[in-house]
Amino acid sequence: MVITSTHNPRVKALLALRRRQERERAGLLLVEGHDELAVALARGARPVELYYCPALVRSEDADELRGRAEAAGAEVVEVSAGVFERVAYRQTPDGWLAVLPAISTGLDRLAVGGGGVVLVCESVEKPGNLGAMLRTADAAGLDAVIASPAATDWGNPNVVRASKGALFTVPVAEAGHDELVAWLRERGVAIVTASPHARTSFATVDLSGGVAIVVGAESRGLSAAWTRAADVEVRIPMLGSVNSLNVAASAAVLVYEALRQRGRLG
Image (cartoon, rainbow, N blue to C red; front, side, top):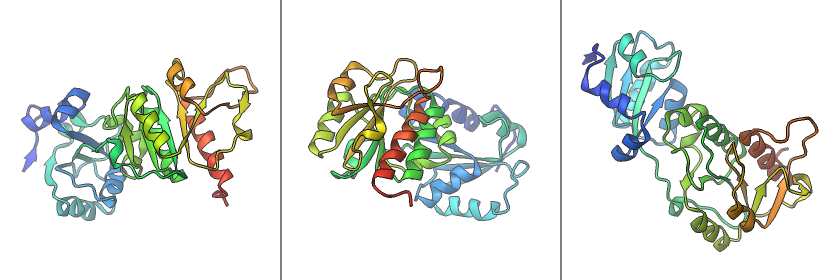
């Protein structure tokens, strides 16, 4: 079957999945791009559908990737270039778009011990920042990234894109503040919050044990609730005229300091 009409019901269903409400109702998410799909399949993801446009595909392993998706249970549907450009959310699509089951985001699926490192994102709104933090978490081998609360869902197509597929390699979760604080306390994980107003530099704090590094929303930073829950509050020294780093950059600095203290950068 080849879909050539943008009025096809399948096209309308794909466009609907751009909306968070529809993703949550259907329990599905979209993964666009060869590399992102390859990562998802390598981690055991089982696509429901794969929409494939031969006219746009440039990858040498196209047949192999299609076969892997089909073997994982995906219905492979060929579409015309015009249809694919309608359903794609990238400016330069590469001909791959898959529909996958939504990722479970409960705390109960996380395996974090007393010596683990997790990244907590409070009300981070921009999908690009969440995706960038997932890439950092993957590179650093973090135990989990937790949204508390979640301003943007993990299935947002731009989170998937910005993560370069790390959404499928790093355990993620969503939780309310009180629930997450209790969960961290039960595991002996110290809460380290980042604030430009803190007195203590991040480099002088012991991050070698179990820690939850908490970063706040782009516009307003951390809430008072997280400040009260913190075991230690740290700042990243700013030597220029701007008073703070981008939230994803701040998270990367703190995460890699935790790795440095563990001797894991050699």
